[in-house]
Image (cartoon, rainbow, N blue to C red):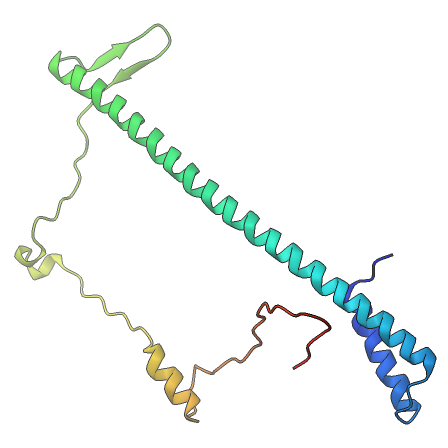
Length: 174
């Protein structure tokens, strides 16, 4: 039965504990257990990498499908708008405000009107609202924080980055 990466990690820690308890002596039993644990870890690492590659491929596939779905959505919206415009054109040119088919129909009425701003500079100040927004200057903030400065409301968060590597043989620890 395949072990989880957490079980393999726990076994590695237990083996380290056994070696410490044996004052650094690696008995044949511990050596065999280390070899099995190393083999389990290498197998699990290869499995994880394989699954991660498949997940990336699937993610890219679904991203492309999303783009295709978005294109189809826009195409259908364009067709719907064109058909609607055609009906409006027909109604205006034939001077009718109601059309009926066998099962559906259309009616047209005057809209309440939509505001169009032609030139913001020509609009009197009474009809304008001043808005002020503040955005953090991220490069300067980061540089100051990395330089040792304490700035309220911001901090540097450190993490670990996982990079794929190619190994010829064994487990590489850094």
